[in-house]
Amino acid sequence: MKEKFGIRLFIIYTIVILLTLSCLIPLLNVVSLSLSSSQAAAANRVGLWPVEFTFAAYERIMNDSQFWRSFGISVFRVVAALILNLLLIITLAYPLSKSKEVFYSRKFFMNLIIFAMLFNGGMIPTYLIVRNLGLINSVWSLILPGAVPLGSVILVMNFFRGVPKSLEESALLDGANSWTVLTRIYVPISLPSLATVSLFSIVGSWNDFFGGLIYMTKVENYPLMTYIQSLSVNIAETLRNSAGMSSEQLQSLLAVSNRNLNAAKIVIAIIPLLIIYPFLQKYFVQGIVVGAVKE
Image (cartoon, rainbow, N blue to C red; front, side, top):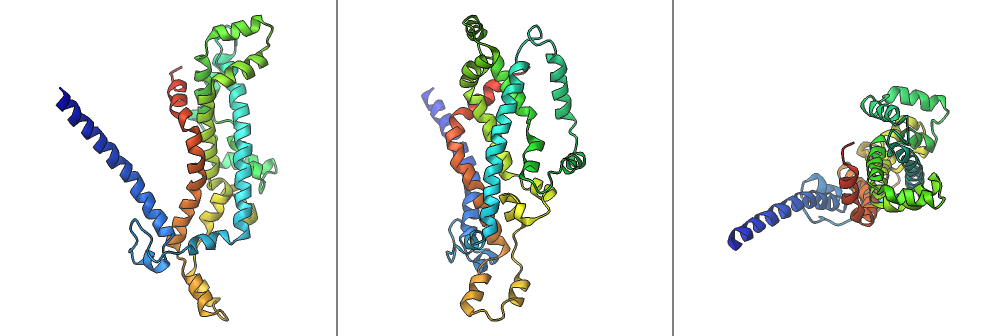
């Protein structure tokens, strides 16, 4: 019996290690590409370690005032969207977590939410609304269209429904109102689900580049992901503008190609998420499992 268990455990660990390597090896290759010279990247000589080590791709991105402006726009967008998302998610999920006897119109609003999840308004109507509100080239055009993530509302609503009713009844008997019950009982107990939807909000806001392309007509208003997505290396243009440059300056410009520049973009995009994720990881699985219970 012990031998069978040992073999089974060995197989499980082997599969887990292989899956881990399948995720880590491409990531290591991307990091190595971003730290390698353009010649080595073009010749496919880069594996898991950098070849002709250089920070030229990162210098190309970061020695740019627009990079830091776009970085600030993205940070503001993430923070503002997170605060707005949490506020609207909590205030919408709390009444929907009540029974029909307590909240008579619950079924109507639940059907409305499900309908909105199944039948999205679409890109063109959303753009027209944003334009008519005068939000083009405003950071709020990146925040307000996704202010109420309905999937997150249902996740938190189901978590709220799992909170013991006796806690709320005791608080009401002690003179607490609904707002006190929500902020003093439901929110502290529901930290796992709130951490989960916070992670969804942060990742979605940080990684989105398409919104910047649609709602921003000026490069200076681009969020970070949109800006680095638009960066590219034009070798012909570089050579045309090389008159008067020293050989060292020209070599520095040609040290970057689209391949290692794109790799550097990917690395920059995932660093903030790698920093944030460990702090929310302990809540993530619990929030998903408990909040995903069927209605």
